[in-house]
Structure formats: C-alpha cells, structure tokens
Amino acid sequence: MTPALFVEYRKVASSVVVRSATALLVLGIVGISASLSLAIARGDEQARAKLGPLADKQGWDQLTGMTAMISAPAALLGFGTVLSWMIGREFADGTICGLFALPVSRRALATAKLIVFGCWTAAVAVIVAVSCAALGLALGYGLPQDADIAGLVRLLAVGLLTGLLAAPAGWAATLGRGLLPGIATTVVMIALGQILVAAGVGAWFPVAAPALWAVFPDDVSELQLTLVPITALVVAAMTARAWQQLQLDK
Image 1 (tube, rainbow, N blue to C red):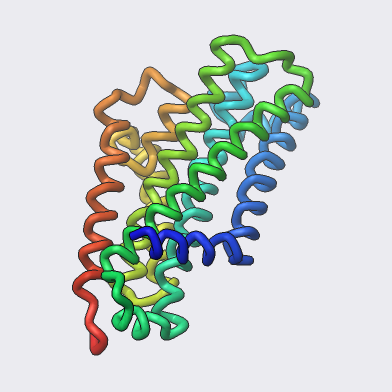
Image 2 (spheres, rainbow, N blue to C red; image 1 turned 135 degrees about the horizontal axis):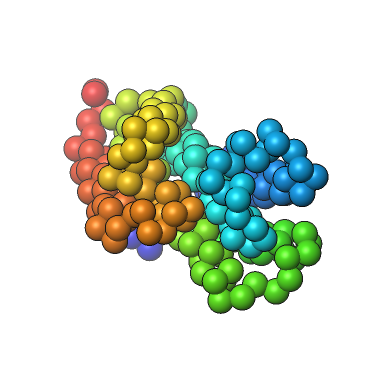
C-alpha cells in the first residue's frame, strides 16, 4: 500500500488538472460569495432573491451559509471531475494494462487513489473555510464569535462531506472505463439533489444533506448526515472490488 500511496500522491502533486481544479474551486467559490455579499450590501434585490432565506441573515451567519450553499454543488462537480480523471485516465491512456503486471494488487491501487483523493478534498475544504474567514474579515464583519466559528466549522464539514460524496464518480469511471461516465454521474447526482430539495425530501438524500445542514442545521438530523459517510464507504468498497475484478478483455 505504501508504494501505491506514494505513486498516487506524486501523480496528484504534479498534475495540472488537480492544480487547476483546486484554484478554480477556491477562487470560484470565494469569488461568488464576495460578489453576492457586495451586491446585497448595495441593496441588489436580484442578489437577495438568489439567496432565498439567507438574504434575511446578516454578517458571518449569511456569509458562511451562502458559501456553503455555493460550495456544495460546485465542489461536488470539481471533486467528481478530479476523481473521474484519477481513475478514468488509466483506461483512457491505456496504462491500465501495465497495472496488471505490478506486484501491488489492483485493489490496493484503487484504495490508494481514493485515500489520496480524500486527502486532497480535505485540503481544499480547509482552504475554502480559511478563505471564507479571510473574506469575512475583509468585508468588515469583525472577529468571528462562537456562533460565527460554528458556522465556519459547518462550512468546513460541508467540504469534507462533499469530498466523500464524490465516491460514486470513481465507481462509475471504473465500470464505464473512462472519464465521462464518472463526470456524468456527478452531474446527475447534483441535478437529482436539486430536485429532491425542491420536493422537500433533500435531507434524506446524502448529496443534498450537507448543504441543507450548513444553512439550516435544525432541519437535518444526525441520522441523515450519517448516511453521507456510510454511502461513501460502501461505494469506495465497491470501487476497490471492481478494480480487483478487472479483466484485460472486459
């Protein structure tokens, strides 16, 4: 496992795809939050309409909720794309055949990919939360109090949970033998989450639960949040098993 982890880390660390995705996610999420905050401060009614119930909140409470609402779908799309690349590129580039000759099992290779991916998503989540805190200070909200820190922690948790929710993209990329199935699966998950939220049952759908919890903590139970890591672990195990059962002619 150790050599597999090292190799996968080197791939991610030297990847232009991963570096670009990191920059786009952080700058995009924080940039949109800053734009909306400034628009609301100017009294822009269109911006207020986009935020819905969050428009009535103030300061840190509004900023952290707004950033969580933006980052949940945006991060899922970015995370799903990167995981699809990490797994699907082996098929697209034809390197999957060479992996059969390695002394490291394919299950270990898949597990290493998922672990390195999880570490990267955690790093992105931390950067987004820290950037949000810096944005709040820059907007003049003052030092965050206990309730404000709790909002930042929820924002961090949303990023971590969203990273877990990208696991189905890896499974789809494995079964579909390429990048596009994983990316398509991610897009479908985001769309389905939006539909179920509109239907009022989004808290029971793991993809939508973290964002709802960040904005409306009392509307999402611990059981509903627990479904997120459970789903991720099950799908990760399915991905590792699929890699173990890979055949060169299928």
